[in-house]
Image 1 (cartoon, rainbow, N blue to C red):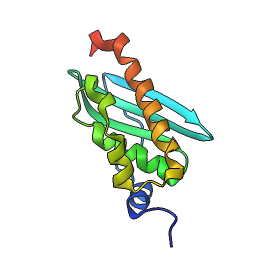
Image 2: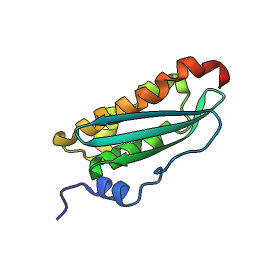
Image 3: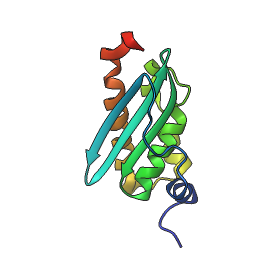
Image 4: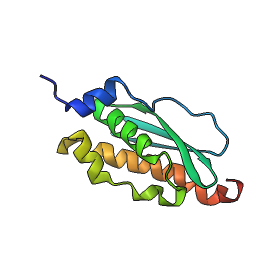
Length: 124
């Protein structure tokens, strides 16, 4: 029996959005906490996130949350990226309460990535 939900197991074993992005209009952010590390790349075109990808060092929940986040961000206007429905992530992944720190790590990586948007807004 696994310690993780099926949703976490699937995203951990087969992440769809893992790896770096190489695209014009790229925003990147990184967050670290408690031995976990998450880097998030956002390919932005016309003020909209066209693609998101991540690189992570951490537990299966960290990778699953990052993969879920990257999936949710595609097609979202950059100025709405902070409106991620984190409770939906927690529910979709059946995230254990003991792993809520993975959500905070993802929030921090997202904030680091889009925080640079304000300085780069004119070039996007």
